[in-house]
Amino acid sequence: MHKDILSAIAIALTIIAFWPYIRSIKNGSTKPHVFSWIIWGVTTVIVFLAQYAAKGGVGTYAIGVSGLITMYVALLSYQKRADISITRSDQVYFSLAILSLPFWYFTADPLWAVLILTTVDLLGFAPTFRKAYDHPFDEQLPFYYMMGVRNLIVILALEHYSLATVLFPAAVGFAAFGFIGMVHVRRR
Image (cartoon, rainbow, N blue to C red):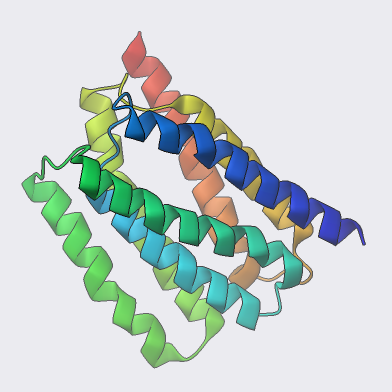
């Protein structure tokens, strides 16, 4: 029963985190990098499916909800032309991310899918890190704080602990907190 409650809290945190972030995109105060959000949306949805197949249970639901909302943020970023400045390194990271997606299919193993897609997801962070390094006031840090905490709760809500179920939320949580640290340093 407590896993259900933790999962509900993680889903609520996901929605609470995204709501002001989406509003800030709509009003133009946040300019997310389109490539990052496309990569994150695709990988998050696929990781949800792999984690669920690895018996992650209710603990995976927040990842699924997050994947769907992330796809919406990618679409919104594109529509609002939030940050469409594409550098050569952005193209390299995006290409690596997209080219690595088929590999999970051929492994037919949730662990390999999660390993590959976690790597892809972290590569997807590179354009956002680059953009935030140059423009540290363009991102809403409360969103990243909540997503970091949400990922810790996701881990606690998992019904089965394995590398396939824990790796993605742990890596993404650490990346969020690392991003927060970098932005704080750059804002000084």
